[in-house]
Amino acid sequence: MPKSTITFVCTECGGESLRWAGQCPHCRAWNTLQEFQVKKAARESRTRPLEPVRAQPLDSISVDDAPRRRLAWGELNRVLGGGIVPGSMVLIGGEPGVGKSTLLMHAAAQVARGGSVLYVSGEESGHQVRMRAERLGALEPGILLLAENDLDAICEAIRTEVPRLAIVDSIQTVSDSGLEGSAGSVTQVRESAARLMRLAKEIGVPIFLVGHVTKDGSIAGPRVLEHIVDTVLYLEGDRRQELRILRATKNRFGSAEEIGVFAMGETGLEEVPDPSAAILATAAPSSPGTVIVAALEGTRPLLVEVQSLVNRNENAMVRRIANGIDINRLHMILAVLEKRLKFSFAKSDVFVSVAGGIRITEPAADLGLALSIVSNELVRPMPDGLIVIGELGLSGEVRRVGQLERRLHEAARHGLTRALIPAGARAGRPSGLDVVEVRSVAEAVSAAFPNPIQSGALIKGAGLTVS
Image (cartoon, rainbow, N blue to C red; front, side, top):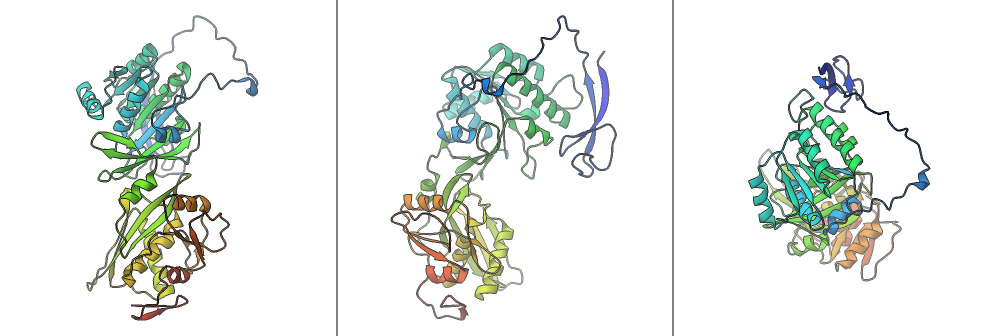
């Protein structure tokens, strides 16, 4: 008879405890321990003794036995570290409707042209999956569909077919009949992922898992799920926008700082090998409040268009809205402009947006955003061909940023002719790009708008007078 045990599992770190407590003994989080009853089936008696396992020298292990399987999409190969590693397990997360299943269907079609792919659907019927494959142009005979939620049946199908790739969509719908709890619970998700991981290593079949995300954007279930798998990828992007970014946050077989850029169209996803060109192609004509900045996504520089709008509002309540930029960063930049350059935004609504649905998380866009807001106040557009790079300090100083030379070369490659960068930065100067070093936001304003403007209060140190 199967034995039943009761354990308490932390929903944050996945740690176990034999009794309930208000605080998790592992991650110190409060009120995260939940009770689960686990039924363990009695193990069958072994008919033969196990063969002794011998250690071997590390340098004698060959890596040629498991070559990477490259896909047709270079963007996906980049994020995976060069291709799919046999026996690896990849977890893909993202908000509902962002395109996780679409991305995996494209990948399945590319792999199926050279072998079989087992696509396990726990949320959709066979008809639904076929309709999506037809719409995406991914209806390949090598794709085998299994609409199943039972873990035993899924593992048996993988062992029987031994495909070149197995896809489980999603891990939250898979359940093990030997465990208590419904599909998606902490125990079910953790144990199902661990069992699939052992199977992948045993028979050398790579497995891709789709993971649901919570309201705060993290993978649903215990954090230990992300520790079990080899690679964790997040598909980011606004469903109302075209661009999608596939970001690696963990990769045991490559860099965890790479991104892949895709565009969502009527026929599914398409890779974007040159995202800077795609973003600049739809850039708005030169107008007040528009500036080009060089953001670093992973190891790849992206030329991004940042727009701002400052609108006078005589009401008591003013608004600050930021799309693609942290709202707290916007508040800090507005405070610096008010304190150091004597601007006043107390009676102004400020709206900031990053074109293309890109989200900027690094401070290298601070100076560009500040000049964009100043451009609104001066009602003057930024000079043509200008790119702005630099972090802004609280005293108004412009600080250095990482990998500046790579950003400058990206700007020169796309035809930009002038760059404002932090002073003292040691970076190569690409040919055709006029580089101007600035030490403060006042110097940056003076360099971007060289002609004095008579209107109101004086900007100290910049030689400009504005309202």
